[in-house]
Amino acid sequence: MSTVKRTWVVNGERWTVDLPPGRRLLDALRNDLGLKGTKEGCGEGECGACTVLLNGEPVTSCLIAAGQVPDGAEIMTVEGLEKTEGGRILQEAYIERGAAQCGFCIPGMIMSSFALLSKTRTPDDAEIREAHAGNICRCTGYEKIIEAVKLAANRWPEK
Image (cartoon, rainbow, N blue to C red; front, top):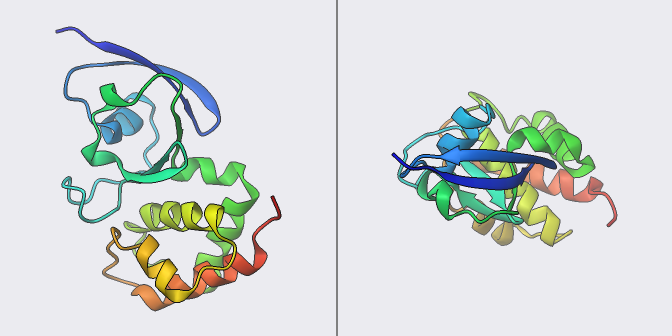
């Protein structure tokens, strides 16, 4: 079985992986790179638990063939948030507003929130809901998540 070699920048660090055919980005992150914060929920791109940022855009990593992610791509997982001021602010806001309960959906929710706040400093409720349209939360409900994103937006660092 032949593999495909890819070199990516993941959470600010350069990684090279040998990928067997059919390996999903989710599996490469979890199994090859040991980044277990990205979760598999449905495996069909419907729940958002596996959301990561690929070149700054939120994607469901269970639907992307890792071999199709080009060399040099920048990937951020939930583990990478601690390296950013905005990521720390966002995580604190989720905690303060009680927007995290079981924790399963939270990595994907936070990644979608981070992508949104990286693009707009003052999102309204509709923009926040749209940014999280591909993420499912069964425990907390979305109102606390919206409150957390608004709180983080008020504290977001200047560019």
